[in-house]
Image (tube, rainbow, N blue to C red; front, side):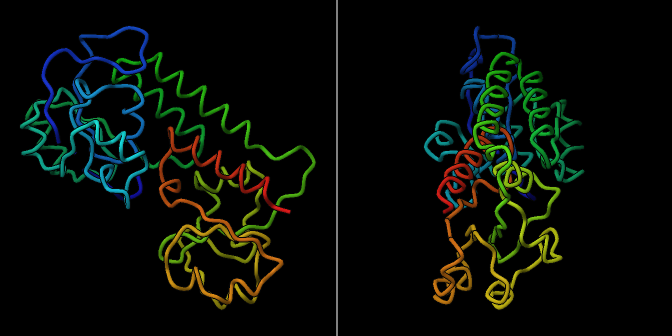
Length: 271
């Protein structure tokens, strides 16, 4: 999940699910080491069960969830020593978890579950359901799936409408590929990838000069590089610009809801 990892906070006593129909006192205690799994698990479990989340989720520059919500949970840097001190039943992490860390946790008798970066809405929904199952909160998981599907449906462009050529300019000046979650959401909201139509692929760098020479109809600004806020962009009256929170770029689960809502707002504002 977006190359990020880590998790801290202890909690003793019976785990209490947040959002589940009934508290399941035998639900496993969990430490999450990835900001994307943090956000999903925080929709289902309370601090008594979710003992710690990654330090990324406490950082406004790296989180994919509301920082105030994240601060209800402890956080960790993700070391084996920190995890062991919390004594969880399970560790949930991204698939890029170092093999040595995973082996050390397994040797200590701690179950480890890893998740890939979700590249589609369907894959994210599968991950939500899997996380709900391993955490003991299937009902809360299905409630989240219902909310995701509703947001995706609500953002859909009107039938028969023409897709709007759009560039999503991400941090470091790169553009997303078509086979990404954000790429799928953009298409669903009625935007077509102007960068892909120009022959660019996943994580290709978009120079300012190239954008000025071949501007899209809409430019989504998700970075803070100087070129992305250059005064020359204002000299393109045919191109509309909109801010897009970088926190909406990389994770699935509840992040899809926020991303879909923002894309719908932008699409409705395109004149």
